[in-house]
Each structure stands twice: as C-alpha cells, then as structure tokens.
Amino acid sequence: GKQALYEALLEVSRKDAVQVSVEIQHLKENYDFFQEKLNQLKEHPELANLDINEQALAEDFEDFGTLRGTTPLAWPVSPSLGISAFFHDTAYEKALGVRHDAIDIRYLQGSKVRSAGDGVVSKVADNGMGYSYIIIAHAEKTLTLYGHVSEIFVQEGEIVKQGQVIALSGGMPGTKGAGWLTTGPHLHLEVFKDFVHVDPLDYLPLEFVPVNSLPEKYLKRLTGEEEKVRREVLQ
Image (cartoon, rainbow, N blue to C red):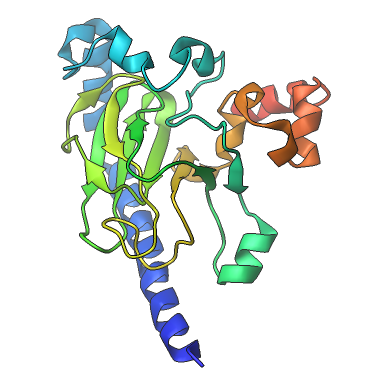
C-alpha cells in the first residue's frame, strides 16, 4: 500500500546518483588541479593534515598495516562482518530497483571510516538527513566514494593519507547521512578508474573478507586462478 511513497523515494535516490555522475564529470574536467596536489603530497608527505598518529591509525584494526595488503587501495573499514551487496549485484537491483555500482560493507553505525589511499578530497556532500558522501581523488585517475556517512571530518581540497579518519559510518534508516535507500548500517564504497565505475574488490585485498560471504568468482581469485585476470584489469 506504499508503492507511491517507494517510487518517490526511489526517484530521490536516482537523483542522488545523477548528482554523483555530475561530480565525477566535474572532477574529470579539473583533474589537473588534483594531480598537482597529489604531486605535492608525494614530494612533501608532511602536507597531509594528520592530527592522529600511527597508533591511532591502527586502533580499529588488529593490524591496519596488514589489512592494507598489496593492492592499490586499503579497506576504509574492516570487512570482517562481510559484504552485504556486491558490484552490479543482481539481487540488489531486483530488490531495490537500481543498479549497484558499489560494494556495501557491513559495519556498525558511527564507526570510523578511513581513506582507502593517499589523495585529495574533491567533494564533500553533507546533505543532512539525505544521502551524504565523500569523494577522494587518488593517483592514476583512481577515485573513491564513501556513502551514507553520518559525520564528516574533512573539507574539499584537503590532502589526506591512507588510513586517515575522514568520517563516521552510517546507513541506519532515518539517521543523518543515510538517505532514502538504505536497509541498515554499512559503508557504501564506490571506486572509479579513469572516471568510470569499476568493481572495488578488484582494488582491495580479499583475504580479509569472510570466505562465506564471497561469491565463487572472488573465491577463485583467492586461490590464484584469476590472479592474472585481476592484474590485467588493474593495468
């Protein structure tokens, strides 16, 4: 009996997705600015606005350094609770009516969210009770988006280091930053390569995800059967 309400909220969520696309296009057109800042960070690491030390970087994880693995990006939150929705997840699209260009990482409401890599904050969208998110530009035209955040600690143009706390997680329906299309606490993570959506799990270390939450294609990668394919994707 609430079909009209569902369709209205779905339209709001679609507009959020369109707005993200606009932001990515704007970033593409102005990437030289962010590349210059990234070059500055590479030459002068002290430019990052870190008000936390190495111990603070690791306090949420038993060993944050290990969770970084050898992949281009690190986990912004621990994946120990599993992945609730995968990239282009058919079940998600069937249930909610929109394509899922991200992964959803189960995580407790109000937990620390860290930058997946060194970069420059290109967009901070604090939309109150609507959908709030952060976009960070990284080297080699890689971008990350952190969605449903309940509190934001960074500003646009700020240089951040991998592991730096940038926000608090959210996603609980009816809470700040969650927006209208969310079913529980989690971090929504999108990754772009050359300004196009890619599967975040191609850029993150899978060995820290519970095996029982991974589809077969990712399990094959863990056993090494698809390592060559993954490397070709990253190139």
